[in-house]
Length: 495
Ligand code: ADP
Image (cartoon, rainbow, N blue to C red; front, side, top):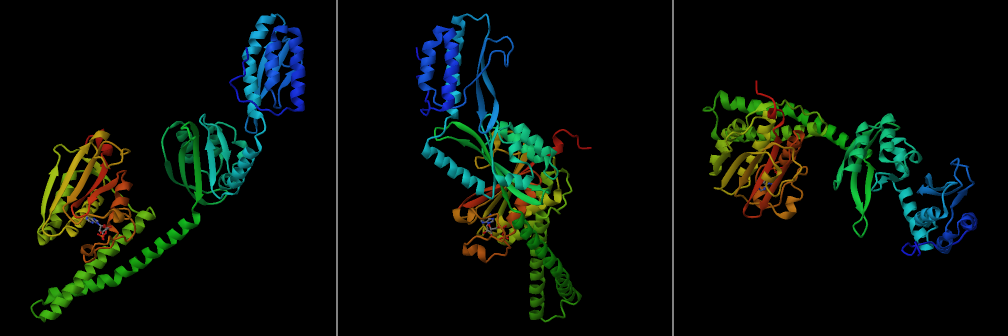
């Protein structure tokens, strides 16, 4: 019987192999039944590293001991051992060696030098990884860190050699002990090494050895045959970009803040003149003053949006959450917008699911979100059109509409604003939540807007743990959805 037929084996022999065979031959001398197995081993063993200890050198009492060193990459893991006791008869020894030999061959085969072209490819890949500015780490499918690029050391101050080749827990512990590296990073590694999630990502700040903001993502890796290879983690340094962002935001905040004071005077005085003696004014002058007042209002609204955006971006927006009656907020929003709806001749329908729970949110911000979406529905629907506002309680993923992401915090309340308006083209849909983005249809260009409303909606919803998305068909209409988690009201009574 040949126990090695199925294994792909190396074919280069070395001096150490000869030594290994010499020692094996000694064993065989005592147990002739082992001969055929050794012959097979002899045929295939072409790699370095098989070590034979002298009797009793490791396990007292063992007559013979065969060990094969086990490595993981560069790291020595221990020895694969076969002991043969003084009382073992030759049949038992032969059986044991039969079991042991294929394992030994596999270990040695894994240690065999790579073929030239394979080695070259590996060297090239290693050189690229060593030169990359990103910190790239790879966990194998057993959660062992098998690779980390030099940038990982630069970013965290943790030596790669203390973590590569060890289970993810060693890496997590090193991170926890490392000053300036947030514990959250350890949790990210721990959680993702066991969670079979697809892509995950985020941003993390490290304060030592140097302040850095890192954008990270993590993906599962598979071979071309679909076999799991583990997970990769990539960390990209965006400190400079974030600094520039912060400077830009601070500049915008300063300028808009400074604009408010003269604007208040323009608005205040034009209103005052209009109020003091409207009849005494020439009709042309009155019209001009009204235009000034209206435009001052528009400018004030724009400045408010910009300041809100800058506050969101610098984490300075204050939420004042409380138990909030969604229906009350929707009714009050639509009441405020009634004049505009009438002016456009639209028909508004409100459908609130009976028994909607109170949600733990900032009512003013909820009103701001709803107002923005309703305002868009009014603006971007040709007169007269239909607008439908709905609010429903979602307790399970199955109740979400198909376009919604499945990772919503549940239970939640989902509010939607649907219109029979112009719709949004697929090209515009991709950029809708970006700064100052306004889509291209001429009907939109003539309407008043800053291109900041949706961005603000998204930021305010996400700050409260919800999500925003939309469905739209050009020429048919659009529906914008957002969710707000029910939050505290699930378990707390409302007193
Ligand atoms: P704006 O102040 O321009 O309305 P938003 O950020 O609210 O800014 O919206 C960005 C762009 O998205 C708008 O300019 C418009 O082109 C498009 N849009 C938003 N809502 C709708 C809608 N309900 N129907 C069609 N287009 C819309």
